[in-house]
Length: 83
Image 1 (tube, helix red, strand yellow):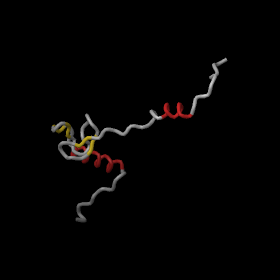
Image 2 (tube, helix red, strand yellow):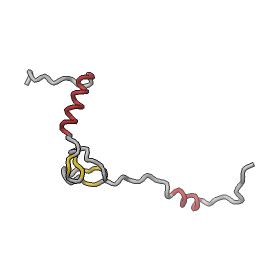
Image 3 (cartoon, rainbow, N blue to C red):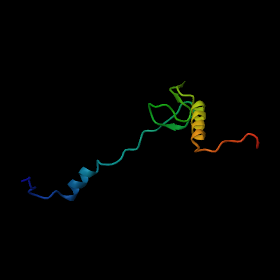
Image 4 (spheres, rainbow, N blue to C red):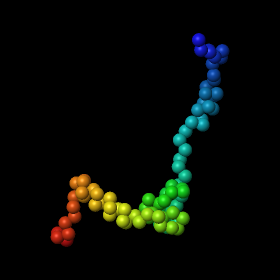
């Protein structure tokens, strides 16, 4: 048989224990290239730079994603004739 507490834990003791259980807000830094908020120690999702060096060509990646979406039929094709 399991152990049984001899005395009840008080509300203050319970609340002191639970005061440490909460979500921490993520640390957000400012990108040195585009000045938008980004997570620390990661490549900026807006411009593809990390520590003043370009790691990802964001425009190329966006074009590739758009082409994939058009091929799958998720995005309508742009008609250049209408312009």
